[in-house]
Every structure is written in structure tokens, then in C-alpha cells.
Image (cartoon, rainbow over all chains, first blue to last red; front, side, top):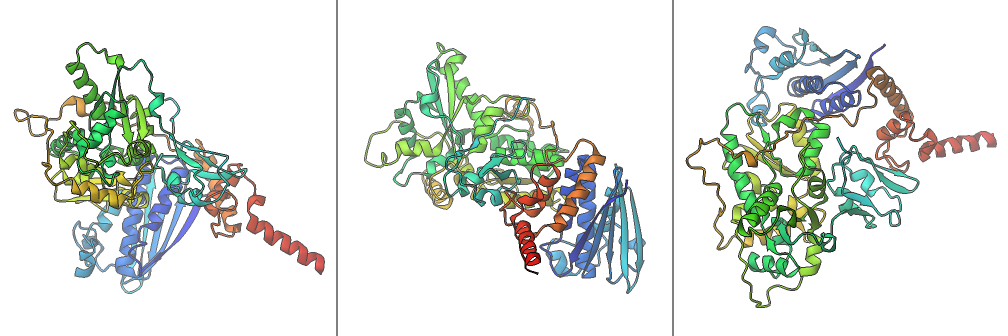
Length: 139
Length: 430
């Protein structure tokens, strides 16, 4: 069976709508009858990805492919790229500004959480060009 | 499990099939079919918002009335919700109101606010336990608890496993009556909750999970208001005295519960949209630092319930005016000799919520559900996407779902139908 494909545009200027795609995906997965732990993992990973794109990359796109046995989330932006992926994967490491942190974001848990809650996380990034994350959550 | 008994119903004579409740329902449980609103039982959480927004008074919360009480009950105990205290302008002392309840035919009164203080004490003890899931979410609002069950199943384990105050009050009232009057038999005693909202009626009818509630009847605050309004403040004698402190009374409005917990990091949100946003945030792990979250389905908390009379902010202001002369707490468990995190077993929920069936699920078969969703997306693309509600569904997206489920047809979309007719007319003219 071919996958269901959902496409979301993530607005880089808008903190208040960051998380909307995550909520939308959550609803779709509930309607499809996925187990609640799968739904939660997808929702957290999606949310962290969305926030990252808003904070660092001025927005981007999210494409979610739902298969009967797995959910694949591809987040793509044309932001600054990640110079040191290994460092960025460290819990608590953050390049967010003071202002962003004061808003309650930028705790340096984005990528670590994405890794923790998914079965695989692939990062393709080029400084000055952008970043593409592919996350898979299996049932 | 037996069918869930709801406490929101429709007067079909009065319903003209408008879109007010349709648009406001937080779980999209309402459709208009054949000119009348229809509630989908599996999605309804009895929050009562439709009752509040219906301009035609067609949506009703179902309550018992005083005359419904079975004569076999020799001892009828009223359980007034603290929100009741804020309804009367001329009321200077809560005792006068309690006296008024006796005059309505009750044999005794047990204030829910008293139990609220006990539940606060138990919650403070619960918060000291190691390895509990945080934030802990209040169990007091039954509409919120049901919402969590339906839509946020992963958060069920965050819900405080302690009885809501009204349940504790009902059990405590019965126990104390038996103690005070040894000639009474347990089956001769009934408790009658005076409720601010339909959600609490559903709770009393259905209980939590498999546990039956001990509350026997639920009558509405507005019903009692009608019978007592205008009777107070005329210098009448009254002997009843409130046994609650201000901490218990405060539970009636949003933030009252968390205030009694003496925590630093908490959140209190009211009104359904806010509550849903907070639950989404908790589920996404966005609020890791919080210890406790109090959520109320109604604006302002219980004082904003669909069965109250007074504006919630006015009611709250009156509640605060009782503060004068009242101690903070008057009800204690006296557990000084116990461990700091000991909770009496009779305050705990015996059957935590586990029985989750996803009500939004299209089909038990995931392949079939995926096929339906693909079809739904295809239909949605063809719809005007203006969410006008004329088809009887709250949004174009829900209409697409209904079409796929075979509950309605594309022709039910009058915007498309109009376009179609227009095209036909133009075709004929050419």
C-alpha cells in the first residue's frame, strides 16, 4: 500500500503557530488508529522539529508519510545549517539567543529529543544551505 | 463496559438546526441532521458548552429534581458545590444558605468545600511521592478527565489518582450520618449533589472507570437558585454554620485548587480551548518544569458552569468576600504520625483510568482507515474550505470525514451545489 502523504508549511515568523503541524499529525494518527505511544513519539519529534525550524531557520516544510507500520517525517529548511552535528546532538547544547531562551525555548533538547523518541534520525546539513531531517517511528 | 450516560440532551422542538453549538463543540461531537443537532455519544465529554451557547435554549443539561428523590430515603443529605455560594447577591453568611437548603427539605448538609480541603491535603502528600509522573493533572473536572481519556490517552497516567472532592464528600457524608444516627440503615441515606455543570452529573451517573459513584442524585445550582433566591439577608435567624475554610471554598474558581497545594511551579487554565492547548503542550513535553496542572472546562472554573446563574467573575468576587472572618483551613486528616506521603486508601481512586478506545478512529483495520483518510483528503480538496457549517458538519474537513463514512453525500454541500447549478445555467445559456 502506498503511503499517505501530508505536507505542512512551517511559518518562521510565528511562534504561536509552531506546534500546529504536530497537533494536526497527532489527530491524523489517532484517526488512523495508531497506538498511543507511537502517536506521542511522533508528536514530540514533530514538535521539536517545528520549533527548531522556527528558531533557527526562518521556517521550512514538513512532509509526513504514514505507512501501515511506520511514520516517516521529513523536515526541510533553508536555514544556516548545522556546523557541528555531534555537538548539536548533545543534551543542553544550544545556539539560541537569550531572547529565544527567555521565551521558554532553546533548552538544547531539540535534536536529542528527536533522536530519543524516534527509531531513526538522519541529518543532512550544509552550512549556509540548509538542513534536512528524516525521522522514522516504527509501530 | 456499559454505555456511557450523558447529561446533555436536546429539545428537538426548540432546535432550529443553526450552527452555534456545532461550531463551539470542542470535540466536534455535534452534527446537524434533518434540521436538528445530534450529539455523538462517543465524542461528547459533557462539558456543557453547547448548553451555554445555544440561543434557542434547545440544548439542556439533564438533572434530577427534588421531587425525583425516592421516598425510601429517610435521610437526604445535600452536597452543595462551593460555586453555589457565589450565586446570591444578598447572602452575607454561608450558614444562611445552608439553612435555606434544610428548608427545601434536606435533612442535613455536607459541604463539598470541606472535602476539597481534605483532597488538597491528600494532594500535597501525593506530590511528595517519588517517581510520580509530572506534571500531575487535577482529577476534579470530569469533562477534562473524559477529554484526556478520549484525546490524550498518553496523559491518563498524569491524572491525580485521588477522588474528586464531591465523591469524597458523598462518602464522608454517608459515613458521618451512620455514625451520628445509629438507627439509620445505609440504604435509607441518599446524597444529593448541587452541581454547577452537566459533566458532574455524568460523573455521578457513570462513576470513574469501573467504580460506581456514591452520589445518588444531582440537581442543578440554577434549580436551587430559583427556589432560594430572594430569601436571604432579611435578618432571619439561622443556626447552621459553614464548616469549610476559605481554601475549600476557593475551589469554585479557576486557580483555587492549585493555591491550596503550596507549590512553586504550577499552572491553572480554564475554558476548553485553553485546556486543550495546555494538554497538547504537556503531551509534546513542552512543560517539563511544571509540578501540577489544574484544568477546568468552564470559563472561570466551576463558577462558570453551564448550570450556574451568575456571571463567573461576579460569583468569584462574592466568594472572595466570604474570606473575611474565615480561616484558611477547617478540615484536616490528622495524619501527623504517618509518613509525609501517606494517603488514606479511601481517598484514592481504586480503579485508575485505563480502558482506552480511540473514538476518533475511522476503522479497526489500519489499511481500511488509511484508505478512508486518502479518500477524505481527496474530497476535502474539492470542498470550498470555508467551514460554513451549512452541511451540518462543523468544518469542511469533518464533512469530508462524514462523506467517507457514508453519513452524508457530496450534494449536502450547498456551496458546491450552488456552483454546480450556476455552471449548468451558464452551460444552458451558451
